[in-house]
Amino acid sequence: MAKITASVFTSHVPAIGAAMDLGKTQEDYWKPLFAGYEYSKQWMKDNKPDVIFLVYNDHATAFSLEMIPTFAIGTAAEFQPADEGWGPRPVPKVIGHPDLASHIAQSVIQQDFDLTIVNKMDVDHGLTVPLSLMCGELDPKKDAWPCPVIPFAVNVVQYPVPSGKRCFALGQAIRKAVESFDEDLNVHIWGTGGMSHQLQGARAGLINREWDNNWLDLMINDPVACANVPHIDYVREAGSEGIELVMWLIARGAMSDVVDGKVVGPAPTVKHRFYHVPASNTAVGHAILENA
Ligand code: DHB
Ligand code: FE
Image 1 (tube, helix red, strand yellow):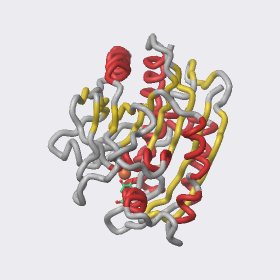
Image 2 (spheres, rainbow, N blue to C red):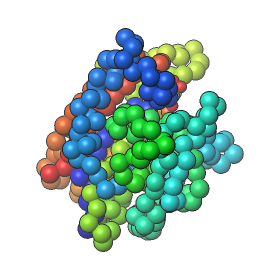
Image 3 (spheres, rainbow, N blue to C red):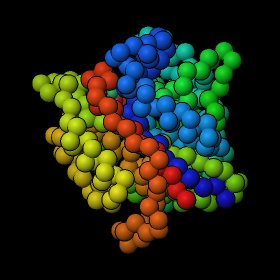
Image 4 (cartoon, rainbow, N blue to C red):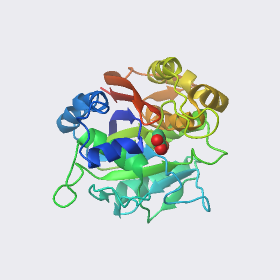
């Protein structure tokens, strides 16, 4: 049986990827940010999963505004880093896991979540920046990411976007799907995006440390309550792009069993937690949770 043993939560700011690609990580501006991921890179080496189920959002890169799936699962054998305007990032291509991905698609759709199945897709900074943060700099000519990755894209760009509650329930369905896969696989689930940021309009540059940290407490300790936080709170308190945080609730939903609206069983262990401002115009949040 496959099992979800850990979850990783991290912001996915594109400038972080650029800082890594251009060798700027030890500059004064970036050093404190990357210091927060030193533990995480070692943890990745010590706890290498067989597969990463990586929840992120496409930023009108692969889908454009012509086609906007709410939830899309990548079932392909591989995914190329996308060209977001400056050429593709110099990082390894992403190897998928078509067998597990199609099993999850089957199971989750039968649990009444209408996923879009994507057999060809380039992956943007939403997916590659978290991989870089957790795995460090890799040379695409000779290195590979440590394991296959199933990309799972969520629309948090163009309204209407899914609620935190829907995302949390979807995480529950993904947990059941993974646990019904025959092969013994150690699966990690990642939630990316956030924390507070607004990239446009009168409130561009908005950061809300207090709200971010309270939300992180709630997400970790009372995910059912966190799932009930309405959209308007994200937008008002964490800025228009703060809504990316609902994706973290998919990963959190996959970490616990919920019966009659209550989390049952032991709480996951917090292995690491980090918060830093600024990275570009964004507050960066990061956590690693493990299940027994
Ligand atoms: C930026 C873009 C993002 O997708 C994000 O999550 C944070 C920041 C940016 O353009 O700075
Ligand atoms: Fe983003």
